Structures are given as structure tokens and as C-alpha cells.
Length: 173
Image (tube, rainbow, N blue to C red; front, side):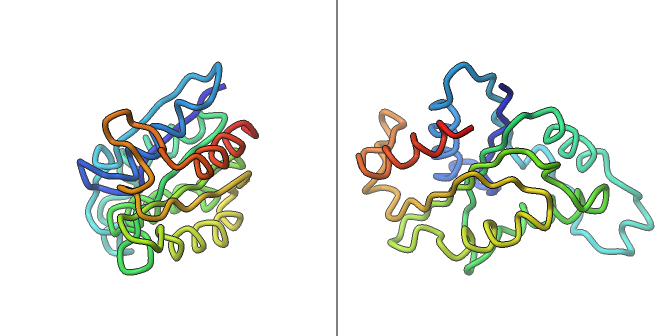
């Protein structure tokens, strides 16, 4: 099984990247491709830019990465209750190639923040909207208070209940 994993964040030290990396590595007998959305940075989407630029190669490459995977794991950062601008822009450009961005892939959707909300607003948005974009969501998990529930030295969830829940979700892939 090929798993594509990424944090929907442009932060180079993203806690969501730490979480998604840990989650992806829980999958047994899987080939894991962890990408950085900074490698797909493009101008802010607009119809005018689309007419001028066409479909940027970065959007094509991102769409192809999704197509090559058997499953996807995304961990969403939350900015003001919704997607980061970096991820939303990548998604918008990619959706112009094909609105079914996620190509019916099995998906695990995660989110975390340093605070107690655990990015639950953006997680709810992703879970609710995902099926409109051909996401086959098999599980989701919010990790609140990241620094209290994740051991950055070992790179693992330290909260046993959250860890067990994450393992159960990953095992569904």
C-alpha cells in the first residue's frame, strides 16, 4: 500500500507534520510518501490568474501524487477556524484540474493545535466537505493540547487513549 501523508500547513516546524508523520508510520507494510506543501506553492488562485497561467505544474504534480497513492493521511492546521491559506490555495488550484481532488482514495483526517480545541473546527469542515471532493474518509481524530499529548523527543503520541484511537483508525487503511 502506498500512503501519501502531509500536513496542511506551511509552517516548517508544523506540529501537524509531526502528527501526520507519526500516524503514517503506524501503517504496517506501507510505502510512505510524506510531502511538504511548501513544495507546491503557487500564486494566490483567481480566475484571472488561471486565464493567465493555465494550470500550474505544482497543481498537476500534487494531483498526480494523490492519484499515485492508495491512501491519504492529512493533518490540518487551523487558522481562524478554517484551513490555512497555503493549503486552501493548493486545494483551489488542484480542484480546477478535477473537482474530485481526492480521487476516491481512502483517507484519514487529523488535526491538532497547541490549545484545547484540537483544531476541531477545521477538522469538522474537512470531514463534512471531503466527500464532495471524492474523499473516502475512513476515520478522523482531533488531538487537543498537542504539547501535552505528544512527546516531541520520541515523535509519538504520549496520551494512550488518543494513541489507541489513532492506531485503530490507521489499521482501517
